[in-house]
Length: 109
Image 1 (spheres, rainbow, N blue to C red):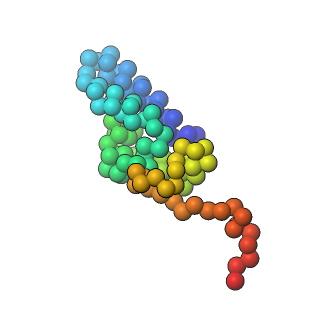
Image 2: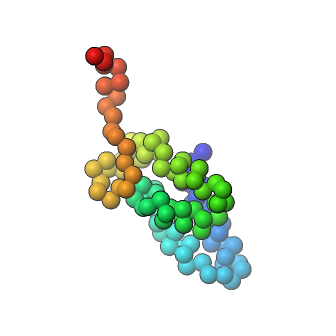
Image 3: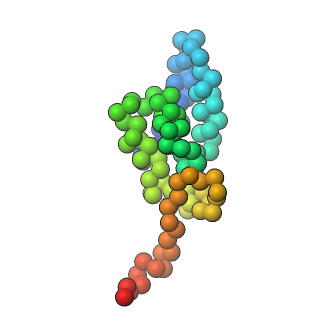
């Protein structure tokens, strides 16, 4: 399951709920804007990410696990392979080492 898409859908649902209740929803509008960038969780602090996850409705007891999935090496390499992340981007707060698939089968000394 793509955690990022789930977060985006949760934010849209929260926006609708807040609008229906005539509650303040400006922060969720800002989050909608942030979520236009699939790499956002690699560019912000853990604290800011937790705030976003809380605002979209992730239960407090699940926030850490959801965050770990959003910034996992698999998510990073997927974004890297799709050209969404540039490994040399100075805006990235979270980076993983690049690997060369040709090096995987080299004999080690």
